[in-house]
Image (cartoon, rainbow, N blue to C red; front, side, top):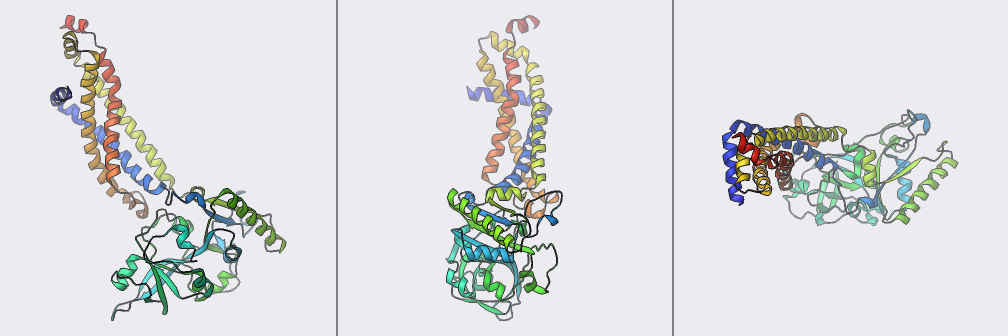
Length: 439
């Protein structure tokens, strides 16, 4: 019977080509607008490490006091000063933890005649790699002893490994960073989580360029590798240069800690309160203790990592889809009721209401499939053009993959069937006797 209904639907659609094209375009346009904005929203709102995000926490400590706060906002700044970060690292109250800051260094290739080039990365502690579960292609991160001894070791990306060592296993080899030799202990596999959850303060959450170089935090500080990220100061440092930054109340260091259960979270929160009270007693803070401890999802939300305009765009696109569906429903209703005579004859010859339902829903479904195919093409063009309305770093995250393709087709089909329910219901209620008398 399905083949028969398909044949009837094709005949009906061919008889009114203009109306059919209008409905297909309305569905395709509405679905494409929704899927294009959804592809961006999906990319920016996903959990970057869903199996572990509830166990990763970001501490905040108010190092400036209420005099620097505006509009009564008591929220601490989103980074730590060097003094506070080193105190948290020294006390080590989390299972795994790491202070980190952005670096940008010049790497000198070993090949004859090759020119130096800049690479971006982070100075971190060895516990950073198991904490964020960074995947390694060769080797591993450095040890706690390397941190304590401030060893000249490095972890590099696969991309940098390809430039320097043609993609071979480079563990144990040396690289020249800012004129100093570092021993490679690990090469990361492809890894660029979005959002960049371990350093939202500096990346804004999203970065198309993955980190190419990781150096030990204390080694980088000792070598004077400057901070290449954001630096916020309530008042200028008393001393010039990188040393003055370390001795000031300026905030420029990100921090991440792993706390595996509620007891550990409670204990760490108590520790932060005690620490801030101690700083108050020591005269460093002359205000009431002010700190925060958020897990990763709450932290990303507080930092507003998902741009508000992507949420608004998605709602607007969904509203446009609803308008398109309402218009399509009206067109289907007019089209179906115009065939009341045909319906009356079929009912008089013994066709039941279920047969009428099946016939007209099949027709609506075919319009939905055609609209879905058009929607796929328009979605592809829409994703390509997202860079014109959104920051390129975010627009590049939107991709047209298999799940999105299937979702686009499913949305077009289901939404058109929903739009066709009322017109089909009205068509099935046509009284055969009235139509036979009128004809």
